[in-house]
Length: 129
Image (tube, rainbow, N blue to C red; front, side, top):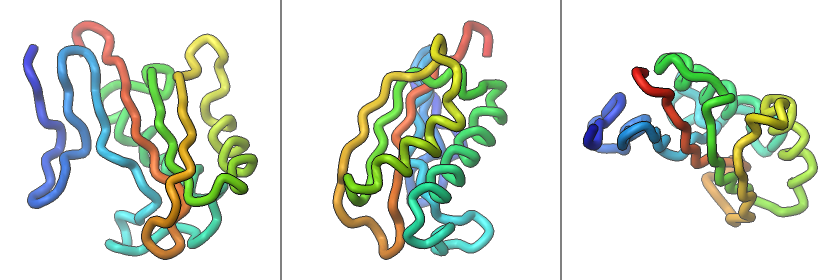
């Protein structure tokens, strides 16, 4: 199977790109789809992390996948001092040790005003999905 774009967006990156059985998601941020340009829970990394993972869960679900299919997460946070709050929210969702993805957490500095986190995610689609 070659490269397949999933949910292309005019002028922007697609929701994801599939290459073989790997699905590479474009950065998942706390911007609210209901309020374009608006950021969910301004400045609150725990609430933003929950929101971002819920967005990921919906995107995975639309492909017949779950968080158990995620193999790698690069988490970009605005301030390393917020890592404990980020990590607690993250771990509320990725609870199964046997399917927990590999992860890097990178202090990335400032994002848009009030934005604290963005996730870069790779998932593995089982054969036939």
